[in-house]
Length: 482
Image (tube, rainbow, N blue to C red):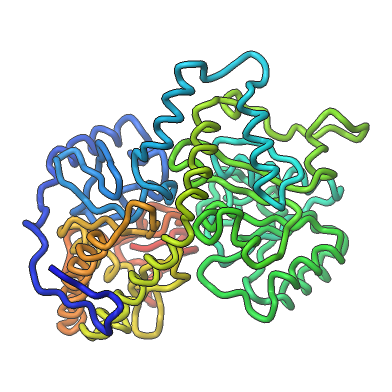
């Protein structure tokens, strides 16, 4: 099949493959997994409540742009773990570097030479980095940045962006979500929220808490274009208020630019947090920033000491080797020149298909070409969980796993062709479901649910969020869905 994705509408002229409808083995393993692991997953975003019932529960291997489940079904993978792959699954240059390192040692009694070499490499690579500190996941380094900010400023409040969904598993952030059980109010009350692209709202927050805000934390760019020089105004406001500016580059790092989205826009924070794709799926995260702040976690000062990051596995060499190999390969292939054009083809093709199938009000693709996101909505733009479930059930049945999108070096034209075929099938399905008013009947099992909800399900038969005349219970609060 030939397909020119730059034309007005992608031409779809054949059926993809036999539909996937067998998840028997994965379902059986998943049932047992629930008995021995809370939620049957070690990452909430990978849990079964985030996917249609008819979807793979257990994955067994991956290669390039593809992955296979326990039942032997093959999927074109756009999710790439939890957005942690940038080159492709099992990318040889990265895996070879890791294998070489394993043979000479993975952890030592004193700092290893790779800790020094990678630190030198990153300080040279990243304009934001006067010093660096390694972690194993994003929460390590965002929470370390918060602690440093409080120590540096002597203040206790943290202001984080309310429009960005996740910053840490730790209490200072999770306490601000509906899933805050186990977090004292005294802790969650120390984290304030502000909207993106509204500098006046942040100024009001500073006025409400004068001289008390230690840090401003946000993703520099997510789905929306910074308006009216927003990032520079953030920089200027933080400087004026004596507050530490922290950019979370966990997702935007590499995708927008290997040095971070902030580098692309020429606005530099005091501290920056990287991870995910920085090691092509291996466990590694990075806190980088100004020396006078970072050194509070060191030995070369006479101020009160900050217990910054001290993890047995922060110096584990596998993640360090993977990071160095990943970044070197990204520079060699000029990864941005692949991600942005590939993303544009995907975004343009999606919108053309949605328009041709008459579902533009229901199936949308938002964000930037390098980091797009599919959302299924009501015509007024409100998120529609039932339509989302129906849409992705169909995508999965045609072998495309696309709950979120990470464009890698392994995604090419063949992958776009298969994706557009599956997208057309999914759009036709939801078109029929909407037209007949049978969206809820168009998929098997419950609809997907938000991760941050206070209860797993309603505690009464008539949900207070759905039925106005129902007695309101505690489960009616927050973003809980029936």
